Amino acid sequence: MPLLKRSINVHFFTKIICALILVVILLLLPFIIRDPYWIHIFISAGINAILAMGFVMLHSTGLVTLGAAAFWATGAYASTMLVIKAGLSVWISILLGGIITAIIATGIGAVTVRLSKVAFVFLTIVVGAIVVLIVGRIDYFGGWGGIVRIPRPNPITLPVITIDFSTKAQYYYFILVILILNIVVFYALYNSRIGRTWRAIKLNLRLAKTLGINSFRYSLLAFVVAAIFASFAGSFYAHYMHTIEPDTFGFHKSVYIQVYGILGGMEYYIMGPVVGAIIMTILPEILRVTKEIEPIITGAILVIVVILLPGGFLSLPQIVRASTSVLKDNMLLTLLRNKVSSKERVDHGDTGS
Amino acid sequence: MVINGLALGLIYVLVASGLILVLGIARVFNFAHGEFYMFGAFTVYYVMAGAHLNFIIGLIAALIVGALLGAIGYKAVFHYMRGDLLRCAAASIGIGLILKQVALLLFGSSNYGIARFFEGMIEIGGIRLSEGKLLVILLALLVVTGLYYLLFKTKTGKAMRAVSLDAKTASLLGINTVYIYLITLIMGSGLAALAGGIVAPLFMISTEIGSVMLLMVFTVLIIGGIESLPGAVVAGIILGQLQSFGYHFFTGDAELFFYCCVGIFLIFRPGGIFGAIVKEIY
Image 1: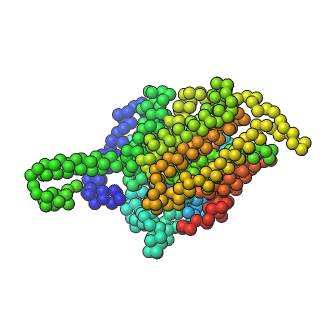
Image 2 (image 1 turned 60 degrees about the vertical axis):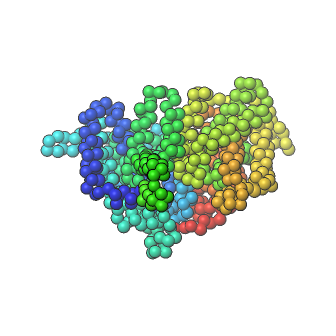
Image 3 (image 1 turned 30 degrees about the vertical axis):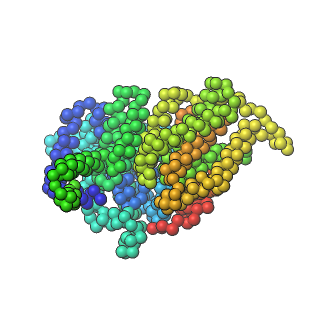
């Protein structure tokens, strides 16, 4: 468990300071990179990061979902419908969209989470397909053509400036706020009794149940929490893009969410999916200069990373540290072999690494 | 229409049994399976339309292409992540991306069809049947029978089933598991490519058919049970009929109705048609 090990090793305040520096850098990003196109990429990366975090949260209870995009879709559509058909304020409808999604997710989760892990994977695929088909088939939801002209969020008036969501940078700050909120909530959950219970369930389901844990309720909680944040990301997406269509929320998106999680590292519950999503969103854009062979390079990098870094991107420092320490040990051992007796060599082997 | 459904269903059976082999024995969740299928279809297309050769030669070429892709995939990628389903899934997505783009570069994004190849009709008892569809059914039945023979009557098949039950024990008993995994991937990918090859003369093919097929095959797996070959056969045939009739009666809403049915079915029978009710229940 790298997370456990890290939280013992790294001092809490150092962590906080690192996080603060990171936040400051992220806050200043629109001033450094002024190209709206790149800000758009960063916004997509933020959305993907939120979705991937939900995937990893569910995985921390031992469940794998391939329908993660379904709740992204319900959030986007619920919020859009409330704004367009009911005429509510965007802010209220984003919250209401979260609540609606939570209700739907509780209903679906109550049925699906009970089943075995394999059946859960397939049921989530089916749920994802059904959601897309429902919004696609029923004309009330806009049909396959989707909904266009979704209004932007109402302006917020602050003492100094008015945020009216006319530029991409303002949306960037909006998604950043959602992302940080998401990270804080997930961090709190992972470090509470709930998070420890999730890990226990994943580690050994039978033992956890023997200890009196209601595994169904805890897994359902992870399912619903992940769905709520996916819904917020979806509402944001709808009001940011001003247009949504069912095909965006299809099976391929769920698959990509899974890739973000795995590439970042499934054992790094928060930073893993965030890093994975950011890299996998930005990488294809950087590689776009190579034109047609871009997906080939992306795919190749994906395969190579999965082969070489079993624990994801974030396990890179650990692997480097481990290999260097092995190297160091080997060098020391060869030095020692020439000088000292075999007894001391054994002692060194025990204390080393 | 029954024949149409049967032909479609048997194609699903072929691709799905390939995926079941790969998933059940080598423990690789292969998202690139659909692309193998697509490559098989294009191989036959080029052998027949480009080189003007026999359909059978095309099928053999497709089989070889699929087997090669599978073997390379295993040796280069999946070998390094044996047993880790999630990593295999991610890697296979990467492979799928690569293959799809390669196909796009090679073949372009337009539709291809080996037009008017099997247009002949046969009359049996007053019912006119398409020659091509009958050929598909015959070939598919032949391949499935061959697969069964291989799995249940030969020594390799026995070893494969043993590995599928318990890889560790199997390797303790002297079965070369790596070899079995390799064989399995070759067979699975070969089956997918073969199915693609069989389809090529009948339907339009494009680089998109792989992704479409993958989703359908997942559905077959859902209904049939994830590790059950007979389940896949039954489920594939049912699915083909459902599609054939569903599009006739429901037209547009068929898919929605269909997925709802699958979802409800799965809730009550999580193990599929023949699958045992899975013990590990929350």
